[in-house]
Amino acid sequence: MAQVTLATVARAIRKNGWKQITGDYVKRVNGKIVGACALGQAGLNLGVAGDDLERALNVYNDLGHAIIDWNDENKWTLDQIAERIEKDWTPYLDEVIVV
Image (cartoon, rainbow, N blue to C red; front, side, top):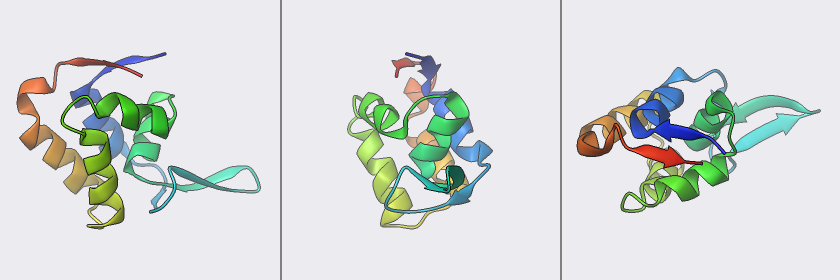
């Protein structure tokens, strides 16, 4: 288990590192990571599973589901997703999330 703040999650989404994908948290080819969605990228950067991160974020008005929609349906960039979290959840950015 990891403890992170919502601000740390936003930074972990923005950090990037892999090609942004839709439909899966993380895509591997021959064991090598080739892409990840916003939650997958954040999870990889934080050392937690993307689906665990989604569940932990859902305590904030289904924020985990919203991030999936922004990534998969709206096709927002990682930076746009991080900015939306920072803007709409400003009062909660210092809240600790247990993943």
